Length: 464
Image (cartoon, rainbow, N blue to C red; front, side):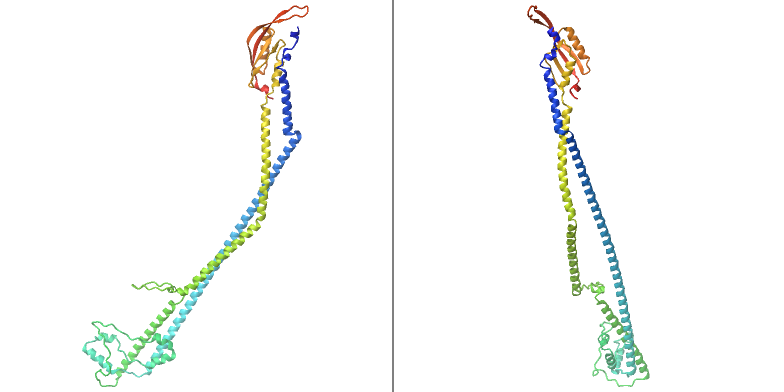
Protein backbone atom coordinates (compact mmCIF):
# COMPACT_ATOMS: atom_id res chain seq x y z
CA UNK A 1 0.00 0.00 0.00
CA UNK A 2 2.83 2.32 0.64
CA UNK A 3 4.09 1.83 -2.90
CA UNK A 4 0.69 2.61 -4.43
CA UNK A 5 0.16 5.77 -2.42
CA UNK A 6 3.61 7.19 -3.05
CA UNK A 7 4.20 9.28 -6.21
CA UNK A 8 7.02 7.54 -8.07
CA UNK A 9 8.26 10.55 -10.01
CA UNK A 10 8.75 12.60 -6.86
CA UNK A 11 10.90 9.87 -5.40
CA UNK A 12 13.26 9.78 -8.37
CA UNK A 13 16.43 11.91 -8.17
CA UNK A 14 16.27 12.79 -11.89
CA UNK A 15 13.16 15.01 -11.68
CA UNK A 16 14.26 17.53 -9.08
CA UNK A 17 17.52 18.82 -10.70
CA UNK A 18 15.80 20.19 -13.84
CA UNK A 19 13.48 22.29 -11.71
CA UNK A 20 16.40 23.67 -9.79
CA UNK A 21 18.27 24.24 -13.07
CA UNK A 22 15.30 26.08 -14.56
CA UNK A 23 15.13 28.42 -11.60
CA UNK A 24 18.88 29.12 -11.81
CA UNK A 25 18.64 29.87 -15.57
CA UNK A 26 15.81 32.29 -14.99
CA UNK A 27 17.77 34.06 -12.28
CA UNK A 28 20.81 34.21 -14.54
CA UNK A 29 18.78 35.71 -17.39
CA UNK A 30 17.29 38.29 -15.04
CA UNK A 31 20.78 39.22 -13.86
CA UNK A 32 21.96 39.54 -17.48
CA UNK A 33 18.94 41.67 -18.31
CA UNK A 34 19.63 43.95 -15.34
CA UNK A 35 23.33 44.12 -16.25
CA UNK A 36 22.69 44.90 -19.93
CA UNK A 37 19.83 47.24 -19.62
CA UNK A 38 20.11 48.54 -16.07
CA UNK A 39 16.33 48.47 -16.14
CA UNK A 40 14.99 52.03 -16.56
CA UNK A 41 18.37 53.74 -16.31
CA UNK A 42 19.73 51.70 -19.25
CA UNK A 43 16.77 52.70 -21.41
CA UNK A 44 17.26 56.34 -20.47
CA UNK A 45 20.98 56.17 -21.24
CA UNK A 46 20.28 54.55 -24.60
CA UNK A 47 17.68 57.19 -25.41
CA UNK A 48 20.12 59.97 -24.41
CA UNK A 49 22.83 58.42 -26.61
CA UNK A 50 20.40 58.27 -29.52
CA UNK A 51 19.46 61.92 -28.93
CA UNK A 52 23.13 62.91 -28.86
CA UNK A 53 23.71 61.06 -32.15
CA UNK A 54 20.74 62.87 -33.71
CA UNK A 55 22.04 66.23 -32.46
CA UNK A 56 25.51 65.47 -33.84
CA UNK A 57 24.01 64.52 -37.20
CA UNK A 58 21.89 67.67 -37.25
CA UNK A 59 24.90 69.85 -36.38
CA UNK A 60 26.95 68.11 -39.05
CA UNK A 61 24.22 68.66 -41.64
CA UNK A 62 23.95 72.32 -40.58
CA UNK A 63 27.72 72.76 -40.93
CA UNK A 64 27.62 71.11 -44.35
CA UNK A 65 24.75 73.40 -45.40
CA UNK A 66 26.70 76.49 -44.25
CA UNK A 67 29.78 75.27 -46.06
CA UNK A 68 27.72 74.68 -49.22
CA UNK A 69 26.27 78.19 -48.95
CA UNK A 70 29.78 79.67 -48.62
CA UNK A 71 30.96 77.68 -51.64
CA UNK A 72 27.97 78.87 -53.68
CA UNK A 73 28.63 82.48 -52.61
CA UNK A 74 32.28 82.15 -53.65
CA UNK A 75 31.23 80.62 -56.98
CA UNK A 76 28.84 83.51 -57.61
CA UNK A 77 31.56 86.00 -56.67
CA UNK A 78 34.01 84.33 -59.05
CA UNK A 79 31.40 84.38 -61.84
CA UNK A 80 30.77 88.10 -61.23
CA UNK A 81 34.51 88.80 -61.27
CA UNK A 82 34.91 86.89 -64.54
CA UNK A 83 31.98 88.75 -66.10
CA UNK A 84 33.44 92.09 -64.95
CA UNK A 85 36.85 91.15 -66.32
CA UNK A 86 35.29 90.13 -69.65
CA UNK A 87 33.41 93.45 -69.79
CA UNK A 88 36.58 95.42 -69.00
CA UNK A 89 38.51 93.40 -71.59
CA UNK A 90 35.82 94.12 -74.20
CA UNK A 91 35.92 97.84 -73.37
CA UNK A 92 39.71 97.88 -73.65
CA UNK A 93 39.54 96.10 -77.00
CA UNK A 94 36.96 98.58 -78.25
CA UNK A 95 39.06 101.53 -77.04
CA UNK A 96 42.19 100.03 -78.64
CA UNK A 97 40.34 99.48 -81.91
CA UNK A 98 39.04 103.06 -81.83
CA UNK A 99 42.54 104.38 -81.14
CA UNK A 100 43.97 102.31 -83.98
CA UNK A 101 41.26 103.54 -86.34
CA UNK A 102 41.85 107.14 -85.25
CA UNK A 103 45.60 106.72 -85.65
CA UNK A 104 45.16 105.17 -89.08
CA UNK A 105 42.79 107.93 -90.12
CA UNK A 106 45.24 110.55 -88.82
CA UNK A 107 48.09 108.87 -90.67
CA UNK A 108 46.01 108.75 -93.85
CA UNK A 109 45.12 112.42 -93.45
CA UNK A 110 48.76 113.40 -92.87
CA UNK A 111 49.86 111.34 -95.86
CA UNK A 112 47.24 112.97 -98.05
CA UNK A 113 48.24 116.44 -96.85
CA UNK A 114 51.93 115.68 -97.47
CA UNK A 115 51.17 114.36 -100.93
CA UNK A 116 49.08 117.43 -101.69
CA UNK A 117 51.85 119.70 -100.48
CA UNK A 118 54.45 117.80 -102.49
CA UNK A 119 52.26 117.95 -105.57
CA UNK A 120 51.65 121.67 -105.10
CA UNK A 121 55.34 122.28 -104.48
CA UNK A 122 56.25 120.24 -107.54
CA UNK A 123 53.79 122.13 -109.70
CA UNK A 124 54.93 125.46 -108.30
CA UNK A 125 58.58 124.55 -108.79
CA UNK A 126 58.01 123.38 -112.33
CA UNK A 127 56.00 126.46 -113.18
CA UNK A 128 58.66 128.74 -111.75
CA UNK A 129 61.42 126.81 -113.46
CA UNK A 130 59.66 126.88 -116.83
CA UNK A 131 58.89 130.54 -116.39
CA UNK A 132 62.49 131.35 -115.56
CA UNK A 133 63.74 129.31 -118.49
CA UNK A 134 61.35 131.00 -120.84
CA UNK A 135 62.33 134.43 -119.56
CA UNK A 136 66.03 133.66 -119.85
CA UNK A 137 65.63 132.21 -123.31
CA UNK A 138 63.53 135.14 -124.50
CA UNK A 139 66.03 137.68 -123.12
CA UNK A 140 69.14 135.91 -124.48
CA UNK A 141 70.43 136.42 -128.01
CA UNK A 142 70.56 133.42 -130.27
CA UNK A 143 74.02 131.95 -130.21
CA UNK A 144 74.57 129.20 -132.73
CA UNK A 145 77.71 127.28 -133.29
CA UNK A 146 77.99 127.71 -137.04
CA UNK A 147 81.07 125.54 -137.13
CA UNK A 148 79.12 122.74 -135.44
CA UNK A 149 76.19 123.24 -137.83
CA UNK A 150 78.56 123.17 -140.79
CA UNK A 151 80.23 120.04 -139.45
CA UNK A 152 76.81 118.40 -138.95
CA UNK A 153 75.78 119.39 -142.45
CA UNK A 154 78.96 117.92 -143.92
CA UNK A 155 78.42 114.73 -141.92
CA UNK A 156 74.85 114.56 -143.12
CA UNK A 157 75.98 114.98 -146.76
CA UNK A 158 78.66 112.36 -146.19
CA UNK A 159 75.91 109.83 -145.30
CA UNK A 160 76.93 109.26 -141.67
CA UNK A 161 73.51 110.28 -140.33
CA UNK A 162 70.13 109.60 -141.77
CA UNK A 163 67.79 112.54 -142.23
CA UNK A 164 65.16 110.93 -140.01
CA UNK A 165 67.64 110.48 -137.18
CA UNK A 166 68.99 113.95 -137.62
CA UNK A 167 65.49 115.38 -137.38
CA UNK A 168 64.59 113.21 -134.38
CA UNK A 169 67.76 113.95 -132.43
CA UNK A 170 67.99 117.61 -131.68
CA UNK A 171 71.30 119.36 -132.25
CA UNK A 172 72.90 120.22 -128.92
CA UNK A 173 73.49 123.87 -128.33
CA UNK A 174 76.07 125.55 -126.29
CA UNK A 175 75.32 125.59 -122.61
CA UNK A 176 73.91 128.92 -121.55
CA UNK A 177 75.58 130.34 -118.51
CA UNK A 178 72.94 132.88 -117.59
CA UNK A 179 69.96 130.57 -117.00
CA UNK A 180 71.62 128.15 -114.56
CA UNK A 181 73.05 131.10 -112.62
CA UNK A 182 69.60 132.62 -112.18
CA UNK A 183 68.17 129.29 -111.01
CA UNK A 184 71.05 128.73 -108.62
CA UNK A 185 70.53 132.19 -107.09
CA UNK A 186 66.82 131.61 -106.56
CA UNK A 187 66.87 127.95 -105.50
CA UNK A 188 70.32 126.45 -105.10
CA UNK A 189 69.08 123.09 -103.74
CA UNK A 190 67.36 122.28 -107.05
CA UNK A 191 70.62 122.32 -109.07
CA UNK A 192 71.88 118.92 -107.96
CA UNK A 193 68.51 117.28 -108.64
CA UNK A 194 67.39 119.07 -111.80
CA UNK A 195 70.79 119.64 -113.44
CA UNK A 196 70.71 118.45 -117.08
CA UNK A 197 72.69 115.34 -117.75
CA UNK A 198 74.46 114.57 -121.05
CA UNK A 199 72.67 112.05 -123.20
CA UNK A 200 74.97 109.22 -124.13
CA UNK A 201 73.88 106.92 -126.89
CA UNK A 202 75.24 103.47 -127.39
CA UNK A 203 77.04 103.00 -130.74
CA UNK A 204 75.37 100.71 -133.21
CA UNK A 205 76.07 99.65 -136.77
CA UNK A 206 73.35 101.90 -138.12
CA UNK A 207 74.17 104.82 -135.84
CA UNK A 208 77.85 105.47 -135.09
CA UNK A 209 78.89 107.96 -132.46
CA UNK A 210 79.49 111.46 -133.77
CA UNK A 211 81.92 113.28 -131.60
CA UNK A 212 82.24 116.99 -131.70
CA UNK A 213 85.42 118.07 -133.34
CA UNK A 214 87.44 120.77 -131.69
CA UNK A 215 87.23 124.21 -133.24
CA UNK A 216 90.78 124.02 -134.40
CA UNK A 217 90.14 120.87 -136.44
CA UNK A 218 86.74 121.94 -137.70
CA UNK A 219 86.62 122.99 -141.33
CA UNK A 220 86.73 126.69 -141.82
CA UNK A 221 83.35 128.01 -142.71
CA UNK A 222 82.77 131.67 -143.23
CA UNK A 223 80.65 133.24 -140.49
CA UNK A 224 77.37 134.40 -141.80
CA UNK A 225 74.71 136.40 -140.06
CA UNK A 226 71.55 134.49 -139.18
CA UNK A 227 68.68 135.14 -141.44
CA UNK A 228 65.01 135.50 -140.58
CA UNK A 229 64.43 131.84 -141.31
CA UNK A 230 67.18 130.86 -138.95
CA UNK A 231 65.70 133.09 -136.22
CA UNK A 232 62.33 131.31 -136.47
CA UNK A 233 64.08 127.95 -136.30
CA UNK A 234 65.97 129.11 -133.24
CA UNK A 235 62.75 130.12 -131.45
CA UNK A 236 61.30 126.70 -132.19
CA UNK A 237 64.48 125.11 -130.89
CA UNK A 238 64.23 127.13 -127.68
CA UNK A 239 60.68 125.96 -127.13
CA UNK A 240 61.71 122.33 -127.62
CA UNK A 241 64.59 122.74 -125.22
CA UNK A 242 62.31 124.32 -122.62
CA UNK A 243 59.84 121.45 -122.95
CA UNK A 244 62.63 118.89 -122.64
CA UNK A 245 64.03 120.64 -119.58
CA UNK A 246 60.57 120.78 -118.01
CA UNK A 247 60.09 117.05 -118.69
CA UNK A 248 63.45 116.22 -117.10
CA UNK A 249 62.69 118.43 -114.11
CA UNK A 250 59.33 116.73 -113.64
CA UNK A 251 60.99 113.32 -113.94
CA UNK A 252 63.61 114.13 -111.29
CA UNK A 253 60.99 115.70 -109.04
CA UNK A 254 58.86 112.55 -109.23
CA UNK A 255 61.93 110.43 -108.52
CA UNK A 256 62.80 112.55 -105.48
CA UNK A 257 59.26 112.40 -104.13
CA UNK A 258 59.20 108.65 -104.62
CA UNK A 259 62.50 108.24 -102.77
CA UNK A 260 61.26 110.40 -99.89
CA UNK A 261 58.06 108.38 -99.61
CA UNK A 262 59.87 105.03 -99.75
CA UNK A 263 62.38 106.09 -97.09
CA UNK A 264 59.70 106.85 -94.51
CA UNK A 265 59.93 104.66 -91.39
CA UNK A 266 56.26 103.63 -91.52
CA UNK A 267 56.24 102.63 -95.17
CA UNK A 268 56.09 98.92 -95.98
CA UNK A 269 58.99 99.21 -98.47
CA UNK A 270 61.30 100.06 -95.57
CA UNK A 271 60.92 96.52 -94.16
CA UNK A 272 61.39 94.19 -97.12
CA UNK A 273 61.28 95.20 -100.77
CA UNK A 274 59.96 92.77 -103.31
CA UNK A 275 62.37 91.55 -105.95
CA UNK A 276 60.49 92.67 -109.03
CA UNK A 277 63.59 92.69 -111.22
CA UNK A 278 65.14 89.46 -112.37
CA UNK A 279 68.59 88.57 -111.02
CA UNK A 280 68.35 91.27 -108.34
CA UNK A 281 68.77 89.56 -104.91
CA UNK A 282 69.90 92.41 -102.67
CA UNK A 283 67.61 92.91 -99.68
CA UNK A 284 68.12 95.30 -96.79
CA UNK A 285 66.61 95.16 -93.31
CA UNK A 286 67.05 98.15 -91.06
CA UNK A 287 67.94 96.53 -87.72
CA UNK A 288 68.98 99.82 -86.16
CA UNK A 289 65.53 101.33 -86.56
CA UNK A 290 63.77 98.22 -85.16
CA UNK A 291 66.10 97.16 -82.32
CA UNK A 292 64.71 99.79 -79.95
CA UNK A 293 61.15 98.66 -80.68
CA UNK A 294 62.13 95.03 -80.08
CA UNK A 295 63.84 95.84 -76.75
CA UNK A 296 60.86 97.90 -75.60
CA UNK A 297 58.44 95.10 -76.54
CA UNK A 298 60.49 92.49 -74.65
CA UNK A 299 60.81 94.74 -71.61
CA UNK A 300 57.09 95.46 -71.62
CA UNK A 301 56.29 91.74 -71.89
CA UNK A 302 58.63 90.85 -68.99
CA UNK A 303 57.22 93.68 -66.90
CA UNK A 304 53.66 92.50 -67.59
CA UNK A 305 54.50 88.92 -66.64
CA UNK A 306 56.22 90.06 -63.43
CA UNK A 307 53.29 92.26 -62.44
CA UNK A 308 50.79 89.47 -63.10
CA UNK A 309 52.87 86.96 -61.12
CA UNK A 310 53.15 89.33 -58.17
CA UNK A 311 49.41 90.02 -58.33
CA UNK A 312 48.71 86.27 -58.26
CA UNK A 313 50.96 85.81 -55.21
CA UNK A 314 49.23 88.65 -53.37
CA UNK A 315 45.81 87.29 -54.33
CA UNK A 316 46.76 83.82 -53.08
CA UNK A 317 47.97 85.15 -49.72
CA UNK A 318 44.79 87.23 -49.32
CA UNK A 319 42.59 84.25 -50.10
CA UNK A 320 44.46 82.05 -47.61
CA UNK A 321 44.10 84.74 -44.95
CA UNK A 322 40.39 85.19 -45.70
CA UNK A 323 39.68 81.44 -45.65
CA UNK A 324 41.67 80.72 -42.47
CA UNK A 325 38.43 80.73 -40.43
CA UNK A 326 36.95 78.18 -42.82
CA UNK A 327 39.99 75.94 -42.42
CA UNK A 328 39.83 76.24 -38.62
CA UNK A 329 36.11 75.42 -38.61
CA UNK A 330 36.75 72.48 -40.91
CA UNK A 331 39.42 71.15 -38.54
CA UNK A 332 37.05 71.52 -35.57
CA UNK A 333 34.29 69.76 -37.49
CA UNK A 334 36.67 66.93 -38.34
CA UNK A 335 37.56 66.53 -34.65
CA UNK A 336 33.88 66.45 -33.72
CA UNK A 337 33.22 63.92 -36.46
CA UNK A 338 35.98 61.69 -35.08
CA UNK A 339 34.48 61.91 -31.59
CA UNK A 340 31.02 61.12 -32.93
CA UNK A 341 32.43 58.20 -34.89
CA UNK A 342 33.99 56.83 -31.67
CA UNK A 343 30.65 57.20 -29.88
CA UNK A 344 28.87 55.58 -32.82
CA UNK A 345 31.37 52.69 -32.69
CA UNK A 346 30.63 52.18 -29.00
CA UNK A 347 26.92 52.22 -29.75
CA UNK A 348 27.41 49.69 -32.54
CA UNK A 349 29.36 47.41 -30.19
CA UNK A 350 26.63 47.74 -27.59
CA UNK A 351 24.03 46.99 -30.26
CA UNK A 352 25.95 43.87 -31.28
CA UNK A 353 25.93 42.74 -27.66
CA UNK A 354 22.19 43.30 -27.53
CA UNK A 355 21.75 41.25 -30.68
CA UNK A 356 23.77 38.40 -29.16
CA UNK A 357 21.78 38.51 -25.92
CA UNK A 358 18.55 38.58 -27.90
CA UNK A 359 19.71 35.57 -29.87
CA UNK A 360 20.64 33.76 -26.66
CA UNK A 361 17.26 34.52 -25.14
CA UNK A 362 15.42 33.45 -28.26
CA UNK A 363 17.31 30.13 -28.48
CA UNK A 364 17.52 29.29 -24.76
CA UNK A 365 16.13 25.83 -23.84
CA UNK A 366 13.78 25.86 -20.89
CA UNK A 367 13.99 22.33 -19.44
CA UNK A 368 11.53 23.20 -16.70
CA UNK A 369 8.67 23.20 -19.23
CA UNK A 370 9.63 19.69 -20.38
CA UNK A 371 9.71 18.29 -16.86
CA UNK A 372 6.44 20.03 -16.06
CA UNK A 373 4.81 18.26 -19.03
CA UNK A 374 6.18 14.91 -17.81
CA UNK A 375 4.85 15.63 -14.33
CA UNK A 376 1.41 16.61 -15.57
CA UNK A 377 0.99 13.71 -18.04
CA UNK A 378 2.37 10.84 -15.95
CA UNK A 379 -0.08 8.60 -14.02
CA UNK A 380 0.52 7.40 -10.47
CA UNK A 381 1.19 3.79 -11.50
CA UNK A 382 4.20 4.76 -13.68
CA UNK A 383 7.55 6.18 -12.68
CA UNK A 384 10.69 6.90 -14.69
CA UNK A 385 14.15 5.57 -14.09
CA UNK A 386 15.88 8.21 -16.28
CA UNK A 387 15.81 9.80 -19.74
CA UNK A 388 18.04 10.36 -22.73
CA UNK A 389 17.65 12.61 -25.76
CA UNK A 390 18.73 15.86 -27.43
CA UNK A 391 17.44 19.36 -28.02
CA UNK A 392 15.72 18.32 -31.25
CA UNK A 393 12.86 16.81 -29.18
CA UNK A 394 13.49 13.05 -29.45
CA UNK A 395 13.64 11.34 -26.02
CA UNK A 396 13.73 7.79 -24.66
CA UNK A 397 12.40 7.36 -21.09
CA UNK A 398 13.01 4.02 -19.31
CA UNK A 399 9.90 3.56 -17.11
CA UNK A 400 8.31 1.02 -14.74
CA UNK A 401 4.54 0.45 -14.63
CA UNK A 402 2.34 -1.50 -12.29
CA UNK A 403 0.80 -3.60 -15.04
CA UNK A 404 0.14 -3.57 -18.75
CA UNK A 405 -3.00 -1.55 -18.24
CA UNK A 406 -0.92 1.27 -16.74
CA UNK A 407 1.43 1.09 -19.72
CA UNK A 408 -1.52 1.41 -22.07
CA UNK A 409 -3.03 4.32 -20.16
CA UNK A 410 0.32 6.14 -20.04
CA UNK A 411 0.79 5.72 -23.81
CA UNK A 412 -2.71 7.00 -24.57
CA UNK A 413 -2.24 9.94 -22.24
CA UNK A 414 1.00 10.96 -23.97
CA UNK A 415 -0.53 10.57 -27.44
CA UNK A 416 -3.39 12.85 -26.43
CA UNK A 417 -1.03 15.71 -25.54
CA UNK A 418 -0.73 18.43 -28.25
CA UNK A 419 2.90 19.15 -27.43
CA UNK A 420 3.87 15.50 -28.00
CA UNK A 421 4.21 14.87 -31.72
CA UNK A 422 4.50 11.06 -31.42
CA UNK A 423 4.67 8.48 -28.62
CA UNK A 424 5.25 4.72 -28.56
CA UNK A 425 6.61 2.01 -26.30
CA UNK A 426 9.07 -0.78 -26.76
CA UNK A 427 10.75 -3.54 -24.76
CA UNK A 428 7.88 -4.09 -22.35
CA UNK A 429 8.60 -7.09 -20.06
CA UNK A 430 7.45 -8.40 -16.73
CA UNK A 431 9.60 -7.81 -13.69
CA UNK A 432 8.88 -9.95 -10.52
CA UNK A 433 9.54 -8.20 -7.25
CA UNK A 434 9.30 -9.81 -3.78
CA UNK A 435 8.12 -7.65 -1.00
CA UNK A 436 9.41 -8.79 2.38
CA UNK A 437 6.91 -8.98 5.18
CA UNK A 438 7.45 -7.24 8.44
CA UNK A 439 6.05 -8.33 11.72
CA UNK A 440 3.10 -10.64 11.40
CA UNK A 441 2.65 -9.98 7.68
CA UNK A 442 3.47 -12.55 5.06
CA UNK A 443 5.95 -11.95 2.22
CA UNK A 444 4.26 -11.38 -1.15
CA UNK A 445 5.50 -11.24 -4.79
CA UNK A 446 4.54 -8.19 -6.96
CA UNK A 447 4.82 -8.34 -10.81
CA UNK A 448 5.75 -4.99 -12.53
CA UNK A 449 6.16 -4.08 -16.23
CA UNK A 450 9.40 -2.45 -17.41
CA UNK A 451 9.28 -0.62 -20.77
CA UNK A 452 10.83 2.25 -22.72
CA UNK A 453 8.63 5.25 -23.60
CA UNK A 454 9.78 6.97 -26.86
CA UNK A 455 8.57 10.55 -27.23
CA UNK A 456 8.99 13.22 -29.94
CA UNK A 457 8.31 16.59 -28.30
CA UNK A 458 7.58 19.85 -30.20
CA UNK A 459 10.69 22.05 -30.04
CA UNK A 460 8.61 25.12 -29.31
CA UNK A 461 8.05 23.70 -25.84
CA UNK A 462 11.65 24.52 -24.93
CA UNK A 463 11.43 28.11 -26.17
CA UNK A 464 9.35 30.91 -24.74
